[in-house]
Length: 111
Length: 114
Image 1 (cartoon, rainbow over the protein chains, first blue to last red):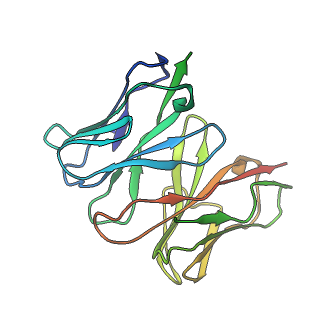
Image 2 (cartoon, helix red, strand yellow):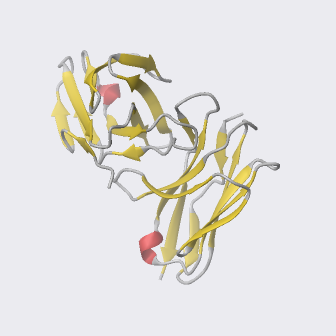
């Protein structure tokens, strides 16, 4: 079982809709969770971090964490063409300095 | 703003050449990482360093070595480049504490080995 799994894409959503991305992780001891956005040919950039159960909102992005169910999700509201990218979920490895990354979900926002 | 820079955006080398990729960060981060990213394989950790002169192997260290002589600089060395090392190489840095594991990435180096 992979440490971090993301729903397979690609995910195509119309402009203005909500894009929903899911991520599950295997280590119950993980405490830190991150969403990165990566445009084609570019490097990952952090868009959200979340550490506590519940929702965290930042502009059009909302991260949701449920440690009991071991999943973290990202909602993109009012999706724009500029949101078209690959989104990587990352989870800390307890007792280590490293992050475990998911394979990514590619989102395409169609006008 | 955290800034992580990499020495080259694009690099073309020949099989058998020794290749140096450099990464510099300006945030006084203890941890630095080297990844490669290939289509369908995601991010794979090559090496990381948690302090000057300290290093640990990641998931795919074969064919690579690293050097960290100064806190801000982490170099990846391909001792004898091979075509299967053609890839996007990403450097990242972070603080060491729990809750501070956010990794900040450099722009990447796209390496082509002919």
